[in-house]
Image (cartoon, rainbow, N blue to C red; front, top):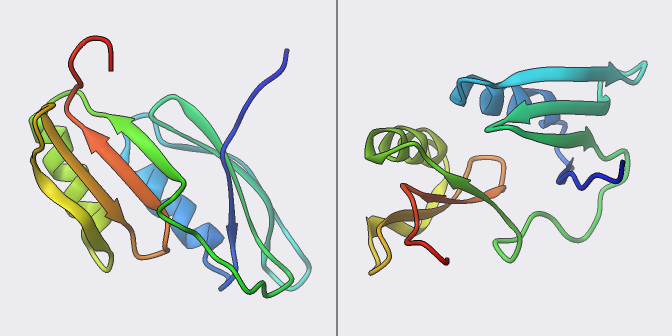
Length: 129
């Protein structure tokens, strides 16, 4: 079966810290695979959050680029309470690109977390979106 999984490349040795933070935020959060290099960097990791498998690792090479808000993880929350909880947690050390509010299509927030990963969070979009 062909699959599609987001792949997060961390450049500051933060992959394990980030994936443990992410899996702690979601009820179904789980680390599925975690392999380290002899130096202790994450060589390969697979984790699950909100029903989605995500891959991550610590890049052994420093690149001129990093995460960008042009690519984000979109989370449809169970309701306003979960939306507020996740938005608040992801904002700790991060930044709001679009603060939690109603933008005409329901409660929504667009944030970049402390690791530079961007998240769009909604409490449910109107049918057809």
